[in-house]
Structure formats: C-alpha cells, structure tokens
View (cartoon, rainbow, N blue to C red):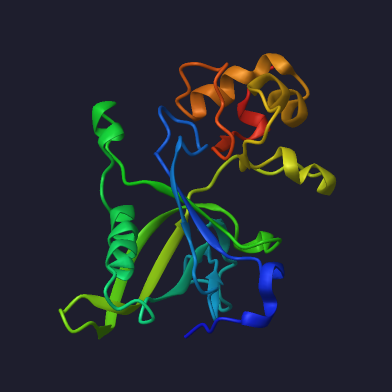
Length: 240
C-alpha cells in the first residue's frame, strides 16, 4: 500500500496514466487524449517483465542438444498497484468514480466504433523521469478490491491491480541523444503555443503541424486552450 508524504510538498512527482483514443489506421501513435488518470498515491512498487522466444528442434542423430533459434522478443508487460482512499471525505464518491474510470480502459471507445476499428483505449504510464516504465500499452486486466465503505455502502477505499502490455512501435534510433524524437509524448499547452511552433520545436518543420492536429482531432488549429494536453506523434511517423 502506498503512503502519502506530507513533507514532500510540491517536490513530489506524481505518477499518472494518460488514456488515449486508439489510433486510426495502422499507426502506432495513440490517438487524442481522453483524460489523464492522476495518482493520489504513487505506487509502492511495480514490476516490468520482458521475454524472448527461442525454438530448439531435437535431432535424434545428434548426441548434444540442437542449437536454439531466436524467434523474436515479446512485448514488455507491467503490473502496478493503484491505491485509492477518500476516507477523510466519507460522503463523497471519489473512489467509486476513479475505479469506474479505470475500468473503461478495458471497454471499446465510441470513436473507435464509429471508425469501424473497435478497440479499448491505449494508455501511457508516466512517472517523472522513470523512462523504463514509459511505453504505449493496452490494459490487459484490472482487478479492484474495495476494502472500506461509508455508512451508506459507498466504497471509500480500494486497491486496484492493473496489468499493462506494450504495443510495440517503430524501432528506436541508434543515437542515444535522439530519444526525444523517437517516441510520442504529451505536451500541456501554455500561452503563446501554436501548432506551428510545437511542430517546429518537435520536428524541425512548422509544416508538420497537421500531424499534431490529426493526432488530437483538432478542427480549428487557431484555437488552443491553455492547459490542454496534446499528444505529439513520434517523429518517424510525421511526414516532412
């Protein structure tokens, strides 16, 4: 169970789960941001696993074992625990709403149905500079255990076990300094931002603003609201 740290104050970096529409077509860049699930308590622990597939064919005429053949790497998997608690406000339904929000990650979105590509949301887990744990994924399972209830029967404490499976994207470049240009990320709009300026800063070409507009379903590129979170596609998926 994660515990809050009052002494950390504003210096404490909170984990969050960015929930996106699945992409249109065959791209591996997540679609428009649906919402961000902010963690009230950071995970006490999380686990990441990755496996590879090898194949070995036994040969009767050979005394020693056959040489295995590498078949490929499997996607990364991550499991984490999300602790929710509103016992200080027992008359609210915060825990109930947050669990329902997580459960929708396993439900097909209305927009994907409309485009005849039904899919649950794609997600990106983020926790400060913990880059190993940051990858595009789908939620394979969610298990919510309610452990405390108000006098009216509304849950006010719960622990959710969430399992994520990576959705592999384009192979990263060999240049270790180019990491910012080989993976999509989220940008929060501030005063003075425009799609053209973001495209210039991210891709080196202001003409690439249409890729950002399409990724976020923006119809009017001249209207950007401060505080809006925009998904910036991976550079290798943006035509120049």
